[in-house]
Image (cartoon, rainbow, N blue to C red; front, side):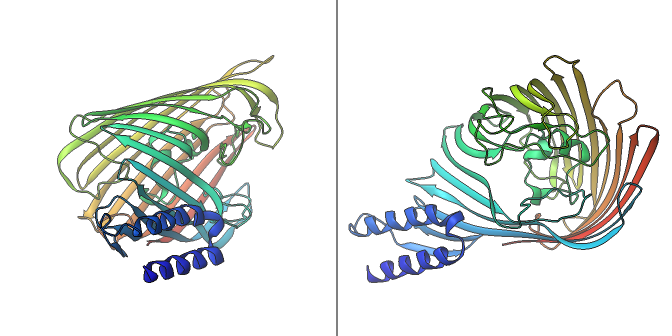
Length: 417
């Protein structure tokens, strides 16, 4: 009993001094609950600690679990282009700290994640996780899971675009496709109901749809997100964002990991689709920080296909958006990417290719972009947690009266603990 109380004090002191603002509350409730149970020793099992894909504290019967982890991506980048100054720089593109687990059994789960990765270049393929370089809240949600039903409430990624909802640590290249970065809907506050079966999964969601929606015309990717925003913030107004997604996988799910690191011995494929209706939202049509239309409506559609067989993977997406402006002409945006990969040595060395095309305003020929990339990954573990990557990316962007080109060489180490 005194040992448990001492452990509780030490844990609370450590988190108070370091990351109490990010992870302290779930840990405090966890330890407080264990202390309450310790009064009835005959009813509850012992507390255990260790490491298994993260540092954990749990009870023997797994009714209570807390797991802590972190991930760091250090990248060196060299870039040259006609629209920005050349640079050579080391950066932390991802610096994440997370915790999760379950309470009262495995039905009730929770997860919280903060990030501090940042870079201050004027042009980059890597969006800032935290412009202030301080830890900023990304995800914080509670999940109820029972017999294939999954109810989630809190802040998390909007389930639109397969590559966007794939964890950034499980990507085949160091950054998401230019197309996905311009179509992704970021993180939002809301709730989702998901049905998970062996051959399909489906979900419906409602989110705030907060913050202005940006559309970059022949420029670097923009990040649309309602992260840490209420619906009354600029651009939020009264409307909400409604999302539905369906994925079919007759031979079993291919998972949310790019490439074929799993080395499936039978062919697996997954076809997914998502639809979003986002109404009464502010529109920033030039991505300059100024709302050009305070009451626009959006319809987003997306199709994705992912095939895995042994060491070979092929994935791609088509994304579409209709922008309905108040008092002005509507316009459409579209884009796609194709990304094949194959292992040179099973689960050790992998080659990745990518081609992407983005047209922010269909009907205009002066704002289209093309992306071509190639990468090599070396895996030090039979998954994405520890790997070294080398990427080359070429962008070709049309602007009125000119065509701009840019070249990027990026190499980075990923360490997940």
